[in-house]
Image (cartoon, rainbow, N blue to C red; front, side):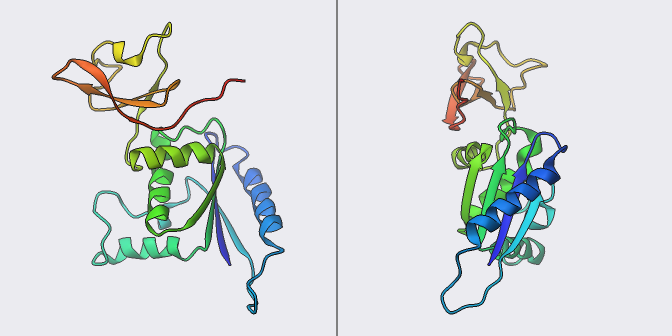
Length: 195
């Protein structure tokens, strides 16, 4: 059985140690299980979200059987039986650095992989399901409880072409030039928990 563990952290420090711990956890979880009548070994691979290049086809061209390189990368995802996704709580799925893992998760869904997530990985899954995996957004927090729709028009800080995500509600907002306001386009399901 081939298993892939993807580790997403906002800081590269400690990723290797975290990966070793997750590898041991997955081996402990799956070790007692075996396919009846088959002698299979458990092959667990651990990768950082920064190490998914060979599994993620370029986004510029639609995936097609006619494009051998792209199709080969999708087949590499399909070679895994299970995918485990872990993200630290400070890993923001809407950040630019998460683009590759968002695209990986999207393609894992396309290949119908069994994908298990915990920690911030659940937030990543919700974000990919809500946005399709293509959307990077700028996180914003409303001030004085005012909704983000009341933000000023785009400027050097708030670009009109880049959506905003409300860090409190999880709403993704886009600038509507006709109405001259920020409007909600979807709910990414990214809601922080207060302790």
